[in-house]
Image (cartoon, rainbow, N blue to C red; front, side):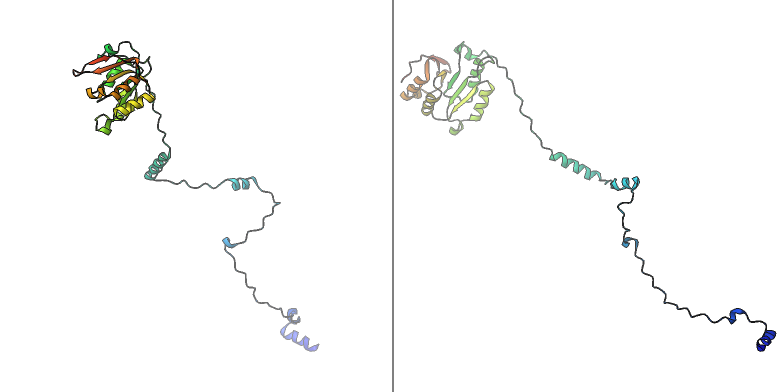
Length: 250
């Protein structure tokens, strides 16, 4: 006690902190290693609460589709695409318009020979170049009468003739007639005609003397010509003469 007083008197009073007993040692742990921070792209999204209220702005942004930037095409590509689109459109060919032809009878060399006779079937045994058929039809065809049948027996181009069957059809139709072609020799053609068409109202005999004198040809002509038929024969001077018709043979 006395020693303490002496110490205090020489050195002064010791602070109370120095006289306090030493504190217990504090345990220091190793520094914690921080976990690596993931990039924003790898962060796991926060759980969505289905019961949480959703704002109207969020709904609009969710429904609105993203607008893609317009693709600009060059003029060449645009024209090529337009051309391809046009080519894909089916082209429908227009239907041919109906041509109305007005026929009037013309006065020519056949008018006096035929007169006012009604001719529905013409038989021509030698059509040559087809001009005679056109002239004859012009004399008997008009728009108020039915188109007569113009029957031709011959081989046409099969025998080396200049007039083809197609050309004959075109000429007869252009004059208002109905072409009927029997591509056979004379006798076979007459026999076929008697079995199919029957009689003819007008018969043009442009044949040789030998052909007319043939008994088979004469008999077949009698079957084709009726009592009302007009039979015209061309003579050596290129004139047409009417021939008397005989009764049809059995």
